[in-house]
Length: 497
Image 1 (tube, rainbow, N blue to C red):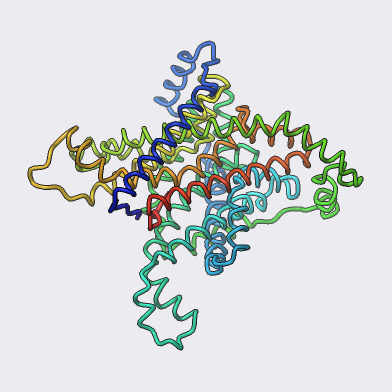
Image 2 (cartoon, one colour; image 1 turned 180 degrees about the vertical axis):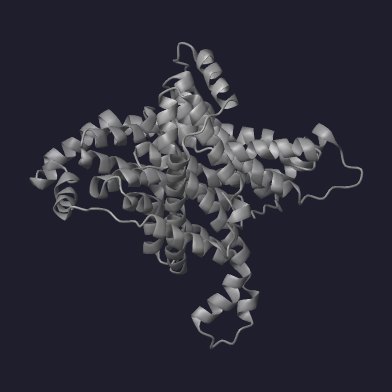
């Protein structure tokens, strides 16, 4: 888990500066963000949804089973192969090329990978598998490398100097890091199930496809039924997904849904050599290519970048505020067993809800603006951080005469958790930015809005450029967040983010 112990005035000063910097950016962003309610009757829609959620209906068992098993198949396939490939990359993470490649593939969201592969392999099992596999491989590589680096090296130093590298790795470092590696793998499976469900919004037959259909048609009872099934699935993972069973589930996933597709290779060649290459470059017209770049910058890239940064920064700070408000309700320091169970259930529901789905529902209620996206990002990410803070609060030790209630929160617990809190928030920054970009596919004018529009207009050259801009933005934010964490002297990796 993350550890933060401010041992000097300089570290405390750095923490204050980082907090002030992030709050200032959010304040400025909020001045320009579009948070208007554009729905004529939001309360009427809320009442309809509330009625649907109080009286859930369920689709026929065969259709539900097919959507559920497809969702799980994509998730298990992507995590199993992604963990293996990510671990191999983690061993070579000292290479700048490996780090750069991992940063690039993880900076592009699963939905964008899906949109790309749909052009090559259609709405196939192969598309869903690759859409999960590629970004998750980059994420596993980064996190596994950090976990192995942070593992206790003392046992390794006791080995004979002639011991081979692989023996040192498997008999010392991996043994010491295994609890963290395993915990992160379980968390990444939960993320994969959410991502797999969301792939339904681009047409793949997962739970998200059925949810979108029901919510668009106003059949909230059936949509709620599917959502409850999804929540139960996530909440029960710890009971039926055991490390020893994971390879078996992975094999069954490949047997149930082999990642194959009917690929037309001449069309693939045309797509890679012609469709994604700007016409000016094909004609060797450098001046025309620069004019094309300038046009896209003025009409799409600049506005998309600004809106993506505005939305993500506001969501980042609100995420922090929500986490600070929610974590006491799940901590034994502040509440007894029954209220704490309610708080923990609330956090499970919030963090299990994909941001894309929450934003989609928000758009139905409040209309098109940044407000649904901000609320969706805040709810999901705030609950994740609140859950981790609640776990960390259980490790705190207090004097017998320590304060209670609000005094315990503000003057005892919060000061000791605040460093961890800021570090966790910085870890979520890149994730929030990735999600902000894809929420544009719902009509919010972030970079994802222009990417989705480019695919719909069959302007693949434009779509590729915008995806590369999104990837570059994510890489920059990742480096800034890492620098700020270094200033806070965070020296460990969170087990689940």
